[in-house]
Image (cartoon, rainbow, N blue to C red; front, side, top):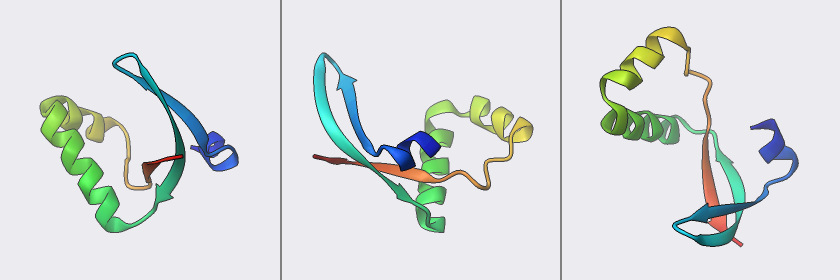
Length: 67
């Protein structure tokens, strides 16, 4: 996260396509809740287990805007 704040210009490779993006922190309660919801839906019990081991209350969502 600190690296993204210092250098927000990133490249993401997905299915063989490379795209340029700017990483934008979204430090709102709504963004955090949406991120937690998506992780819970994708990983189910594993996400709950991680939440027992790690405090994610201070995590910040990051949006990738195309350059």
